[in-house]
Amino acid sequence: QAAVETQSLTTATERNVPRTLHVPGDFKTIGEAAEVARAGDTVLIHSGVYSETVRVRATGDEGAPITFQAAPGEVVWIDGSNRFRANAFVISNKHHIVLDGLRFQHFRFAPELGTMIGITGGSKNVIRRCFHDGREIEGYVGTLIGAAQTKDLLVENCVMINGMGEAITANGCPDLTVRHCVFYNNFIRALTAQMTEPTTLFHFHHNLVCDS
Image (cartoon, rainbow, N blue to C red; front, side):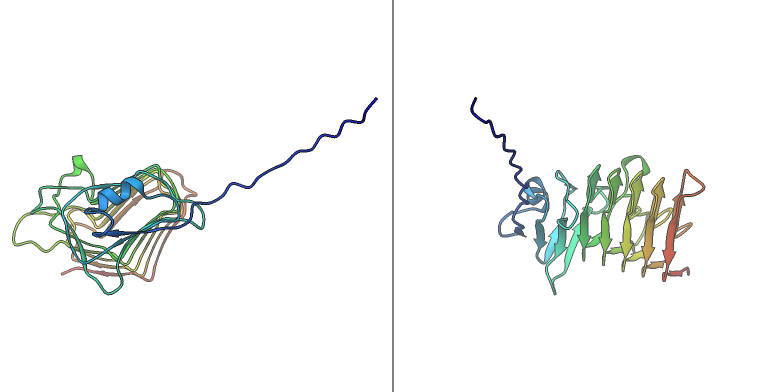
């Protein structure tokens, strides 16, 4: 009887090759780039005013985030069209998404519609070096960041001026970290963090909170 030898081969899953997607250039809008961005990609946004709501479609991976970043040395404004829109970025059940160096202005205060940056579910997302200028001649402007049931959210090196209600609202976000941020003259309060479990940690350190 002939001997039978069984061999088992395992192939490693290959990561996507990281790409840089230029806006404008490769895509006219940030939203168009978000439609095709995948783990490891950077959406590099060049100077301009972008009046849109961006819905993040894909999720990043450990060591391969999807990054939406202002090009170095360039000024990028995400604009709410004279408070017509309430939302700038919608991030739902995504992991390892990074927003870096973006500026926000003229967004609508409409709690029923959400916040400028809305994060629901997911984990390990980062908002870094972002600026909200809520100074208007009259009326209210929205909250910059609203997060719910997301884990390990990091907000760092951001400046938030004149958000209505607060600059950041977080509900049930374990291991939320807010550090090295400036909260200036936000109406009512700077931040709300509601944790559903008494053992849930919230890290708030090296921030500056100012009120006129």
